Length: 153
Image (cartoon, rainbow, N blue to C red; front, side, top):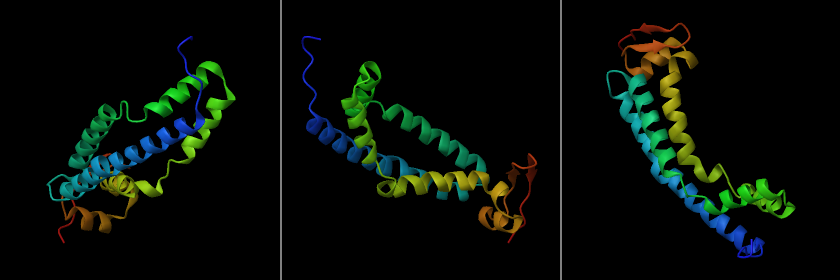
């Protein structure tokens, strides 16, 4: 405790803002664009659902591995808040979380949503749309857990 420096709210907030911007750039550039690319590529395969699911697992695994240390200041503030119950750390955490915006992570959201829609299309859309989306290829209907063969268009 003798080496612990006095909290600096301005420095912590600036570091968190910088880390959030870097994190959003990482999510958009490394996760969102890949997710969307894999989603579109899976439609060109003979089993779009399977390849969309494999792509999603691959992307989530890469995301979990690469996220370590990306938001170090926020993680430190959260740990100190839990340890000390200090209002200072609670305030800094609250303000830091306000800087996180989905609006700045649109490619990330679109990429993930596209993969999920391709995987769950049979449960979400009528049969005509599924056949159009999958191009007449076979697909798994999650609502009945049966393999269906699409109609060639």
